[in-house]
Structure formats: structure tokens, C-alpha cells
Length: 231
Image (tube, rainbow, N blue to C red):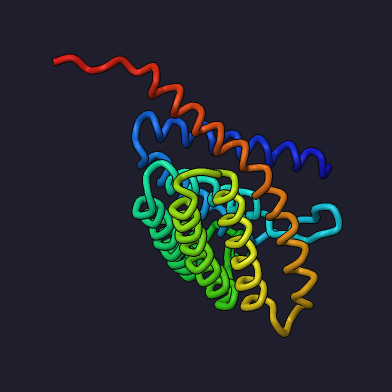
């Protein structure tokens, strides 16, 4: 089963890369929109916990980890400002999601609908989970974009692998520590949770490096073969 999940990680990263390529071809809005969708999807999936090897991780770990690939792509090819636009889009989308879910839970259901408790159990989030999620997200994603940009500046645009890994691995660590501490401190042993989730996120962060190089190669290849426009 773990190997199936491993394959699914590669498929998800590959799908995000294909979407990013379409974004490079038809407009960066595609990438920003997909990024926000991944973040919002992760918020919903996080309500389920999974067993991955000997670790326990939220079901949204994969789509959320993949979002860092897209911010790095935006930072690399469209600049820091565009990457931060995506970060804030995901943040605002997450707030809207939380508010919409709470309204839907409180809204009286149809008399014949008997799934209210299941709906509330599945989608309802405690204030600690909401606070932990939003805080971890906004801090770690901004760190990711800022560090990526800083490394790119100091290396004169060289060593894409370095800024991709350094920014993603460090931001994933920040995200994990903040989220687990706020959400579970005093309720669960947080060190094992932090360790397990961070190891899994490191695997995804390492695997996404070839995919950002794929986008770079496709961009260079496409640019070289573009025909000059004629008036």
C-alpha cells in the first residue's frame, strides 16, 4: 500500500507540473488558481488521518506539499510578487472555506436529510485546528517565497535545485512545527507527530526537484522554438 502512495506522490507532482506548463503557455493565472485549489483541498482532506509506514499524517499532506512546488515555479519564472499573490489567494480561499463550512453546519438542513451529524463530524474543525492551519500556512508559505528569492539573488540565478530544496524543506519544517504545536500541544505527544510528518514532507520535497527542472527545460525549449511575430 505504501508503494501505491509513493506512486501517487509522483503522479500528483507530475499533474501539478503539467498544469504549471499550461500556465506558462496560456497564463500564470492557471498556476495561481491551481495553487489556491490545492491549499483549500488540503484543508478539507486534513480532517482524515492516514498511516504512512510507521507515521501518522493528515490526508491533505500530499496536495499541500505539492503547493510548494507551484510557489517555487511562480517565484522562479514570474517573480516574488506573483508567488506572494498565490500565497494570499490560498490564504483568503482557506478563510472563505472555513466560514462557508461553519455557515453550512449551522444552516438548518432539509427535514428529510439525515446526514447532519456526519457532515458536521467530517467537515467541522475546532478553533485550534483552524488557527493552527492558517498560522502555519501564512508563515511557512511566505518564508518559502522569501528564502527562494533570496537564494536566487545571492547565487545569481544559478543552482535551482539549491533554492528549491532549501526553501521547501525549511518552510515545510516551519509549517509542521507551528501546526502540530498549536493544534495538539497538551493533547497529543507533539514530537513524534512533528518528526513523522516532517519526514514524509521531506520525501515529497526531494521528489519535486526534478519536476521544477522539467518546467525549466520545457520553458527553454518552447522559447527557442517560438517563431518571431511579424507585423
